[in-house]
Image 1 (tube, one colour):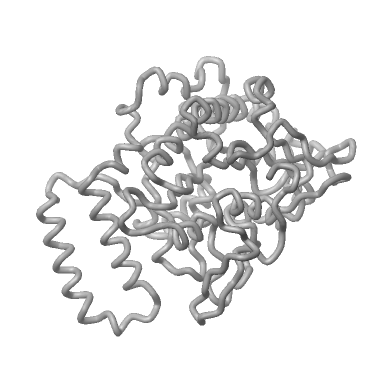
Image 2 (tube, one colour):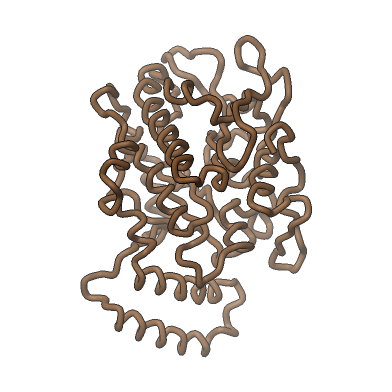
Length: 373
């Protein structure tokens, strides 16, 4: 990753992230919590859903939380609203037409079982005009008043919320335009585009070289008013052929992340945008018989950038095989405490209320990383 190395002063490298639950759904990387936390009342919400609840509004020019994750995180519904309810779920644009990312056969079945409404179309259809959309919204509002008292799940309020916001998004086109890279300066598009000719090979479930443009879309979404964006670069699940697969995936990540950080810096936005890069867990220090690496929840890495944080640091250390943290262990909740503080929501003082009316602090543990805040 030569570009990352050349700009190491822009990053915080965490070598001692501990406490991974080992789950392949990435929910812990979206919330700080294990998948089963408060499951009896719907589970904990992802950070973007919390931001949507506390900082978002239906009058905003764009949804507060955009989830662009593809592959396993999408199938496993990693970025979910939990006990906050469907009103605050992420807005998921359909990325398949933009970036091809094949799923394993089992994942395809799981995605099919979710139904057809897990992603969102961002353009008005040819037969659905603005006038017809307004008429449908008025009719829907009239019908909703008749059955509002019948719904106690929060779904009706969610429909109201999304009706208002979706109508504004579709009619203005501003948010949809943020995902249209043809509206970006070609020189900037070129800056974010990885050199496909230098990237050899591609695993069936891995991203293509042009997926580095996801980082450009993230920047455009932030400029359009989105407060939280999640995306994936895959596939790091290298149980076999680890080294060849990393030679294909790492240059994409190296190029896209470097372009994002430098672009935000050039635009004067870097101090206002916090970036965290990580995965569900680490990989085994020992190479298996298929020359791959298996799951290793005991210790893993993370990288931070932006957000006014004190960068140019390496935090923590491991033993000689990178199998166990030996200095400055940092947890997922420590990272989220840092992110929440960066956006003005101190996790130990800010609460959200569950369906029973009980308040919960944003985190039940963890402290902002003292070296960077």
